[in-house]
Length: 398
Image 1 (cartoon, rainbow, N blue to C red):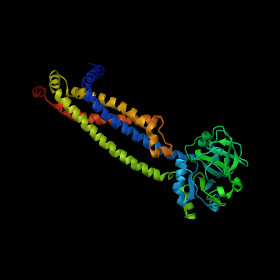
Image 2 (image 1 turned 90 degrees about the vertical axis):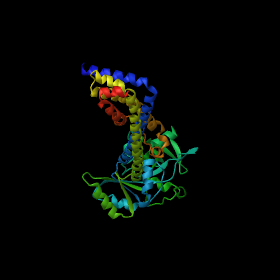
Image 3 (image 1 turned 60 degrees about the vertical axis):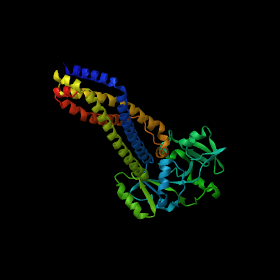
């Protein structure tokens, strides 16, 4: 018999056997599906958070970010979680650092209070004063080149734009301003920004600017010249300004990365325990199956079936059961990450959600293969013992 027909015959026999003991096999398939869904969710969760942190740091266009040392966590929260913040340092720091020979571009922003529009307020809106002449953080995010800002005009982030709808004027610090441009969605704190010129700060009443005072800035973004080593430039800046905090593209979100590692450790332990339970359940199921079909196997061996045929027949049953469980597990895992992830504080803060991509499909397939492998390992233990029995012994023990 050709190998293809032999395999087809084995699979048909295996499917008939699986369908005969449907309830017992459903239990095993459910165990595999739970393992696969947990693994899919863990992989996609890890990737969604990691990718969001990396994307947020890249989207700023800066290799180095400088903030008051006590405000590093606050700055990260604004960059990654869009939380409005206000913290300040002397503008003199910017004036000194921008002229360093290692720096190609440097710009700064000043974080103020929240926006109030007409009848209501943008609760998560951050007013940001910036210098259009030196800016390289905001300008790349316009679909079209925006109109240069003039007195009383502002740009707004995507979140604020959606909130305001078609409103083109709003009240900012009790003064009417005009919206002349809106940014595309960035997935960073820029989405919640209302951007005004630094020159307009002196037209704002001191009573509504909060902790801000003239001569202060909140954050400095630095772009290095090509060929400059990031570590060397960072060390030089830290040596010049030991009381100023510095973040590099790779260090932004350090606390979140640490939390993510802890969560991954918990996932790993849970997956290992689930795998062990799935192996034990597969071993138990196929031990019972082997005991029930010992005489059948003895007869098959007596009429010429090889040990490999017996192995293939039983492991095909395990593969079918685990494949069905794996497919269901992929569906459950993807459902959880796409529809229920918003209930997880870490994902909702970062706005990180797994999207359909080739990498996510690959993760899902890997998770399913792990589930199938675990089931086959558990099933192989009793099946190997059964296949090694002599035909006469197998028939007699029945």
